[in-house]
Image (cartoon, rainbow, N blue to C red; front, side, top):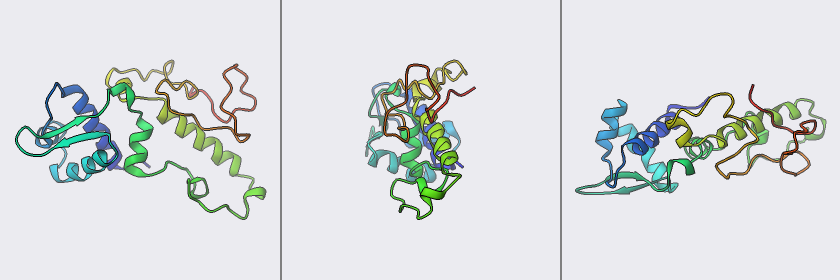
Length: 175
């Protein structure tokens, strides 16, 4: 489940993208517009600044602003920065120990496919897509990653096929 931390981080970034001109936006303004506690937002923006997603400025005229254009941020990177790795089961976490049952695990392919679908879905959507309402079914395809982030590799270590042959692919188009 995605926590309020990640959901609010997305709301902050969208708010900044929609309201940022050339100035830094005070957290108080964002808090008021988004109806989120300023104290809670302080925790969230600290993470976003550490991850170079936002730039912060203290003092008069201070606040926050994006470090990149909205089309250069993927939802996946924001969720993983605020939540940690997205994985449906512990054995698929990046630093997980190799499970002694891996070679005999009948359910592992199910979790690997689900992991790829989740990853590719979130990394194929940008802040700009959300802001401009480009989330129709025709526009969301896991294998089309216009943000330039790598899609999950198949078991054989190769990138997903772009030939239309999906017989061996671990990802699928969202229906």
